[in-house]
Amino acid sequence: MADFNPFDPRLRNDPYAVYKTLREESPVFWSEIMQTWMLTRYDDNFAVLRDQTRFSSDRTRASNRFVQQMEEFRQASGPVGRTPTMLSQDPPSHTRMRTLVTKAFTPRVVEKIRPHIKEIADELLDQLAEPGRLDVVRDLAIPLPVIVIAEVLGVPPEDQGRFKAWSADIANTLAGPFQPPAIMEQAQRSSNEIADYFLEQIELRRRQPRDDLLSALVSAEEQGDLLSEDELLATCVLLLVAGNETTTNLIGSGMAALLQNPDQRRLLQDDPSLIPAAVEEMLRFDGPAQMTSRIATEALELRGQRIEPGQVLLCVLGAANRDPEQFVEPDRFDVRRASNRHLAFGYGIHYCLGAPLAIAEAQVAFETLLQRLPEPEPAGEPEWGASFILRGLKSLPVASKVVAAG
Ligand code: HEM
Figure 1 (cartoon, rainbow, N blue to C red):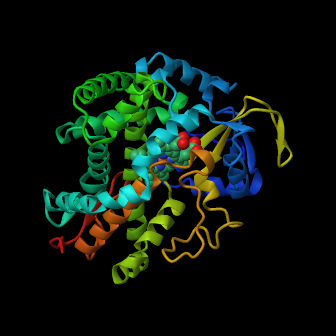
Figure 2 (figure 1 turned 90 degrees about the vertical axis):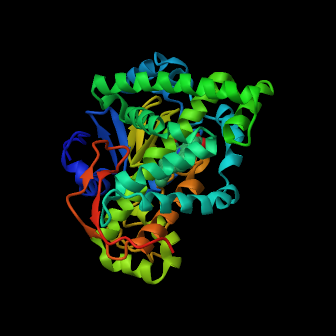
């Protein structure tokens, strides 16, 4: 393969053919355009993600000039941008920050809010402007995660619109150095606005703590050296950005897979107990986070390629999840797949903190969609977003009669 071009229009609708060529021909591939290694086999991704000694998440260690530019940009972005989050730190800082938030997202905590997630999903479908026609992305996949995370953090529901806009702007920076300057500048403005917004909310919690995650984080910050105010801000923004776009994309891509595979959709309608396995299959088949990155801390060799310290490795999770060495018939969407150890949430110490919440939201979304839209049909062309890192639909029009919540 000549090079991996992140702007290749073919990637937008279907990156999997390009991944296949890479996986078969050059599983440890040097991209001149991006100045990074790309890993596309399951075993290599797994080995890198579980080894935080030789592979760091700290972007300031990267010798890649694009990543360095991105770091400079971040540091000029005010308190949110210049403070590293747990996602880009190694132990012990990573452990300290992650421990403070983990408790809020355990499966047990998430189970408690599940009935409320169901109420929100039903309300969203009750509010459709045009019964019989909906855009699954606009009408359900976008608002559901934003409402849920705003409630978990404890910010007022009327601010959800602004939340969504800020979060989408900041999520764009994940494609970082390859984005036009206007997008980066918009992200910077949103990052400053959101910092001001959270500072106000934090001040309210200092005066009057409530039973929400923000109050818990404020109390950790007040108890001494556990969390600085900038870290508190950066954590709130991380939770918002990491959780919104991704969960939206999972619901959108999952619904697209069901529309393309009506036999699989009918299996779920006949036996809703298959929904949890179906959500895992959606994560594997067309996951929202197509890649993450690590920086080599020492010189090493991988499949005969010499990797220098400071070089960036892109772990192409979307490619690992279609590796035939790991998954039987990987290009088949199979809601009854037996063994499904996908890497859609990463692996190791940075394994997605919000996975239990994202899974619960997606399960509820599909329970609701399949129950209330008995015969969904595509009603126009789905429109994929531009990012090759965060993959997801911008629009997914569907026609179906909508039945009342049962
Ligand atoms: C389907 C939805 C989601 C997907 C596919 C996803 C994917 C990922 C992946 C791949 C990582 C690991 C990145 C790495 O190793 O470099 C990660 C980390 C993370 N995710 Fe998610 N995520 C989702 C939803 C959420 C939600 C709902 C939240 C929070 C509300 C969240 C919060 C986080 C946080 C805080 C981290 C950093 C963990 C750490 O560094 O220890 N994510 N996510």
